[in-house]
Image (cartoon, rainbow, N blue to C red; front, side, top):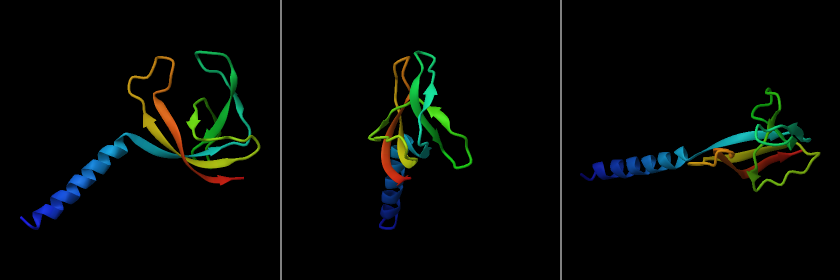
Amino acid sequence: MKKLFPFLLISFLFISCKKENERFGTKIFIVAAQKTMCTPWYGTPHLCLQVKESANDPFRGFDENIEGFNYVEGFEYTIEVKVYDIKNPPADASSKRYVLARIISKK
């Protein structure tokens, strides 16, 4: 029994952490120095961020808010964001919530 207790404790902690990680993921975004024009299906064209997830990818318009990120045009950022799933979002809203975890670089 003494040998079983640590195993059960570690298993419980691992399962608890796994459930927490299922609620969100972490992504690295490279944010361009200039914004681009986005045309959402539900509204009028407006400026939005340009992001890519890899140096080899092309930039794409990103029509979402990143909570805690204060973008300054003219700087290229590499940022880490936490992505949360939103349960039952409104029909005209995203099913994801993006929160800045940290700024990796600002050039």
